[in-house]
Length: 346
Image 1 (tube, one colour):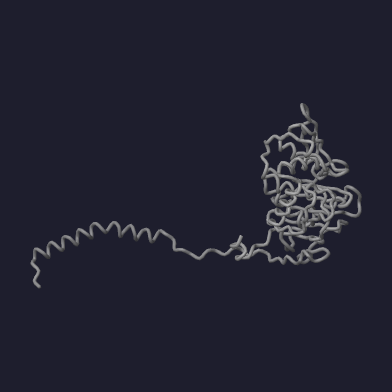
Image 2: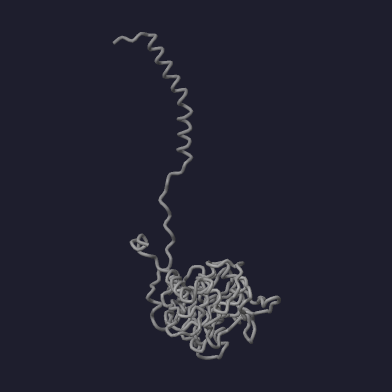
């Protein structure tokens, strides 16, 4: 086939025109390919210390000391635990899963369960029925029937004065005593706290009601992650309404107030103490120092009197902020990860 010179000229002009139009696009594409970094394989997370959950189920004191490390102090409590609240690492523990009556430290689980369900500025008029069934010898903040309270005032009564009357009213607002108990157990299970059985949401002694140093530490750590809980549990003093006037209440946690012969612990931020004749003295305590936050639980000291629970917690906190910062964890307060099949099913 013969192509004329004019046709060849036209084709050449067309090709030059296309090259002129496409050249800027080719240059931009090349520049972009040079500027954009090549995809790289993601950096794997730094390995964390491996812990075996079974270690904390062994009897006696569990701790992994470095060479030349200092062991935790010997205390008289039947069960105790020291953990890093940020990471959930358990630094040391004794009989961590031993099931014992928790007394009013169970109110930490009550707060975790009910706080998100009731607005703090909600106002409620108390009925006689709501105050029925309070156990003999219970600590009371002074809630009165036919008076109207803010929910925030009732929480002051729970956290500071450990008022079982305030717990009764809040549980009633939440749907009732039994329903609240079942919700509390569901909350505990969701956090991996499997030692806790709730019969009386206020922590009053009841047959079958138990928790453990491990579970109480889980509740304390989780509570500190919620602003309302953290604020309430750190208050040393507050005013409680009484219908036209109010009176002062103080926190019964002596490490927080520094009263009754117990020195205030430096950096203390709560959480909750308790006492019943069946449980003895119990305590969830948390403190912050040099960028670290520790949570300690102490259950039923057998020596030293009524203030021993605070002094033993003090010694455990001192150890945790000192030599305990160099140990390898013996467990974790974090709930175990669900298997893939279970998570999908849920």
